[in-house]
Length: 170
View 1: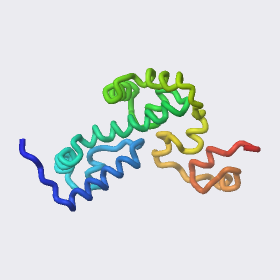
View 2 (view 1 turned 90 degrees about the vertical axis):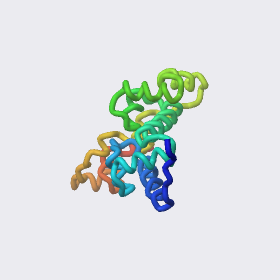
View 3 (view 1 turned 180 degrees about the vertical axis):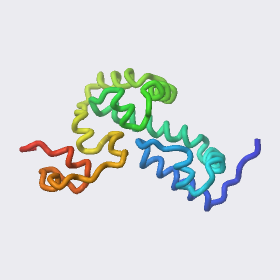
View 4 (view 1 turned 180 degrees about the horizontal axis):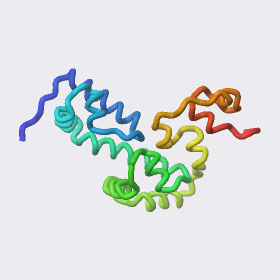
């Protein structure tokens, strides 16, 4: 197998696509999406990405999602299913399989091991309220806030904040 030589200018394009995947890991990203960020055809992008980073964009993205899932399972009281969808997986089965493949244990076992350590856990409602985990619905063209939401307490100028109002006295 011959080694692919990647010019420096294309490395910058690949890095931009990888950074896009890092920032938007919870969104449904496709090979075409990432190739478009790098401004390359999807086949050329795939070949170059694998040559530079040693894995396909899909493998990189799922690894990034599993890393984020580890953080959430370790520090929150979210269920495995909630974590699965919060990090961008479309099915619990594929999440569990990929998680086990990367970490060597199931998401439930991972969460239970960290729960035994006794570290305080962040309540799931707080995690979603403050944006520590994204809800999938947040990525589906949010509708603009209604006129009344401008005056509601807790409104911070974005459509999602009208839903998550700060509790009185908190």
